[in-house]
Structure formats: C-alpha cells, structure tokens
Length: 150
Image 1 (tube, rainbow, N blue to C red):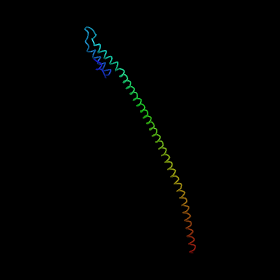
Image 2: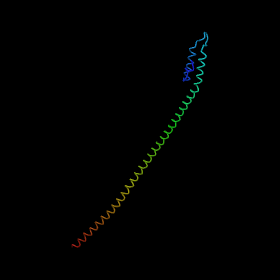
Image 3: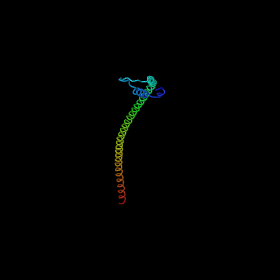
Image 4: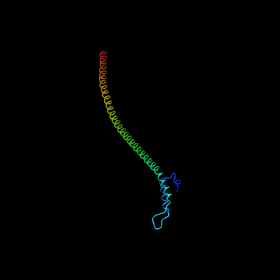
C-alpha cells in the first residue's frame, strides 16, 4: 500500500487495511509468524499516525457539540417546567380571585335586595300614612258637605 491510497481515509479504514495485509500475509511453515511487506505496514502505520490527531479532534468536537446540545436541551426543559409552574400558579390564583369575586357579588346582591326591601317597606308605611290621611281628609270633606246640605 502507498500513502496515496490512504489519503482521506479514516483511522478505522487504515486499521482495516493493516488487518487485511496481515491476514493475507503468507504464513511461515509450522509457526504463528507471517511474512509481511515491511514498507506497506510502515506506510499504513504512518498514515494512521497522521489521521489519528484529526480523528481525535473531530471526535472531541462531536462530543463537545453533543454536550452543548444536551446543556441547551436541559436549559430549555427547565425553562418550560418553570413556565408551566408559573402558568399553573397563575391559573390557581385566577380561580381564587374568581371565587372571591363571586362571593362578594352574591353578598352585594343580597345587601342590595335587603336595602331595596327596607326602602319599599318605608315607602309602604309612608303610603299607608298618606292613604290614611287622604281617607281622613276625604271623610272630613264629606262630613262638611253633609253638614252644609242639612
């Protein structure tokens, strides 16, 4: 393998090539050893060393991006929970205000009815007095008229 064939490859690709080179190497008879082309192995190792810092930097950047995304998601989730709690509290307060207003409205209506009933009773008393006075006045007029006619 030459350096040109490994340009732009990933570390895993280079390691796969190295593994294939060793796997396909001619075995030494009655031994676990194999004959490999030293230049090809050294080229692959050199390529791996060149690619490794880029791969690690890219992995670190991806990890940092993932952490940033998680941090943002947590912050947004916390904000939504906080907003939801505020909404729930506001709805609870609104219900309390409405219930209090209904109690006050009922009390005011009752008091207004009582006031009107009291004033009507006073008017009724006044009207009865006036009716009594009118009846007495009319009766005197009749008596006067009857006294003049006799």
